[in-house]
Amino acid sequence: MTRALTDLLTLSDSGRWHQAACRGDTNHQAWFPYPSEDFAYARAICADCPLLAGCTEYAATTGQSGVWGGREYDRGRVIRE
Ligand code: SF4
Image (tube, rainbow, N blue to C red; front, side, top):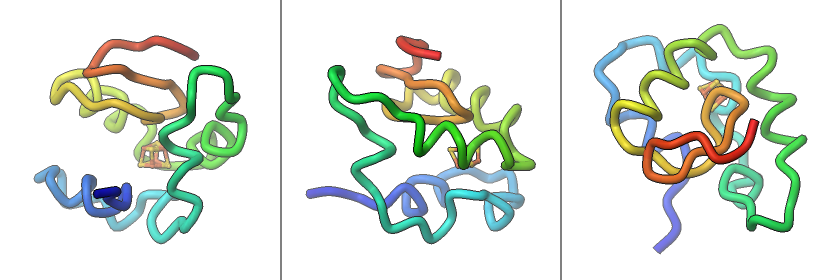
């Protein structure tokens, strides 16, 4: 089952996720690209997000995969920037 990124964001207790630039984005696949795909779409949205720094920390410390804070993670490890 595919979950929306906004579903995952609610797992955080930061209380600021409502400010996320990706909130409500319907292009879910763009946040979980295949290795052969670029993630320019998601990276551009992250670039203007006020939560960018906290987002990368959240992804790293909670073992997330996909694009977070303009970087791509695999189980909390940065695999592409
Ligand atoms: S930095 Fe990117 S992934 Fe993180 S909340 Fe903002 S838009 Fe979403």
